[in-house]
Length: 163
Image 1 (cartoon, rainbow, N blue to C red):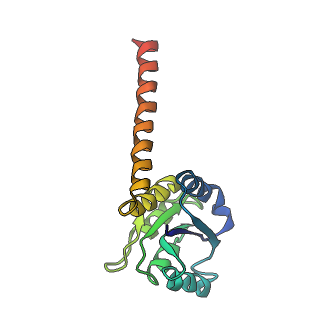
Image 2 (tube, rainbow, N blue to C red; image 1 turned 180 degrees about the vertical axis):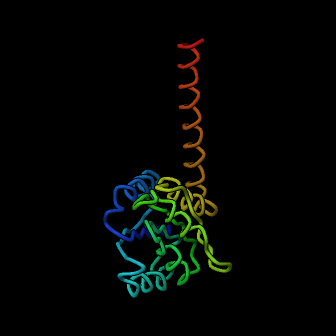
């Protein structure tokens, strides 16, 4: 199975990124986590991206706040799917990171999840891998059914309490 590369622009992003790590672990998807900054360590970020496919990666998650150029810098140097996580930080509470991540020019796509949306970033990687991995597809189906059952159980509780 291919690995997911998880790159964060700063170690302060780890509390959010940990949610992606935990999600990938729960599905048995291998991953590597690194701290590379698009602005402070551009050579290292580029080297990772250029070599990602040959190093066994199948998708990359890039998490960054504020200017959030990381996902775009990674995507510029690989044709692997890149999923950006805009991180809530600074005066604009993540809106700046969201806009920086989502506004990529034609030809260099970056999939973007919600501000601090690490779980969905991991799930999107898993869905990409599940296109050719039936075991992962079954695990995704089971998760969706379990999630639905949890919502319906909460509905029943509320109905019984309030109706």
